Amino acid sequence: MSHDKQNTRENAPLKGLRVVEFGQYIAVPASGQTMAELGADVIKVEPPDGDAGRYAGWNRDHYGPIFSACNRSKRSVVLDLRNPDGRKDAFALACTADVVLQNYRPGVMEKLGLHAAALTGKVPRLVYGQVSGFGQSGPASDRAGFDIAAQAESGMMSINGDGDRDPTRVGFTVVDVMAASALTSGVLAALLRRSVSGQGGIVDVSLVDVAVSALSSTWADYRLTGVVPVRSGNGQTNATPAAEVMPTVDGNVVISAYTKEHFARLCTALDRPEIAADPRFCENAARLNNREAMLVDLRRATRRFSTADLCERLARAGVVFGMVRTMAEVRPGQAGASADLFVKVHAAGREPLLLPGYPATFHDYGRHEGRLPDIGEHTAEVLAELSLKKTGWRGE
Image (cartoon, rainbow, N blue to C red; front, side, top):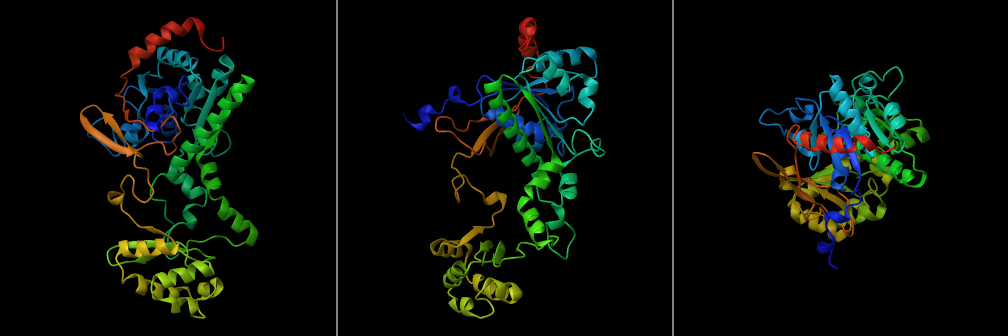
């Protein structure tokens, strides 16, 4: 049987699971979207005005960039959690779920009666996943927690950028994205445990923990040497050339070739084998001491080639490199990106967007296009389903 014939939604890994999401912006919505892409029925509970991510930096319609990136293939239900009826329906809906996801500031869900203890006490098999900025308890827990704050507080910004410039944030919401991945893997692990024990549980993720953990190798270097890491631009402090940007006739290529063998290959590929033989550059320690002189020679050599020619030479030589592309230059099926990585994301009133799908595939289940829900589009549908379930919530 061919892969295409096997690639049906019936084979989705999370088919049959229900996820109820109380999420806005990125971390929780992105986790919910992953579960939707894997086949779960994800019900997004929105306030009457919709997820704030619908409008962040956008005023053309209800489907701004953040919302478009994180909410396909979900059902949208509007419940006003400020009034008792809305909270009652939200609690009932959550009790029908296998998984509840939320990223309200700590304390808010307690006030609403939708916190982990209340729901897992009612439904012991429920998995409750939550994301906060700085943890669910402790002196910083009540702070507003956005990606940029976690980048700063974790040490990430202190090592990002050029040494003679201000600390620099990573150019996208990297901590939010990593938090979504951490939440998803934690929830899936809890579901696996539930399949054995029958018991659900609570999965906590904080943005600052995610950011600190992502720096694990940098922490190891710091603990082993006692030297506080500093910003070093695109290079590395203990090896060179490593992550060095080299200019070409028509662009830039990033290169890593810091072992003796790879440095010799690089210089041969550039038709400059004498650089590798230079006593100033023949060993990594020498290259570190003479880094600027080495970079002058290497960049003088790379400027003679077009980007395509240089990349071809480096590929033949087995040197690690990457063409520095703009997003306008990234293509499906190019430089190892899967030909079907981008999927169509539909929304009312506009042409479909081509956006990256879930990066993993299965032998019998691949990527599918999706659709963004309008605000409250599925409220009546889901509440009608809920009325049929009220006499037999899971866990009773």
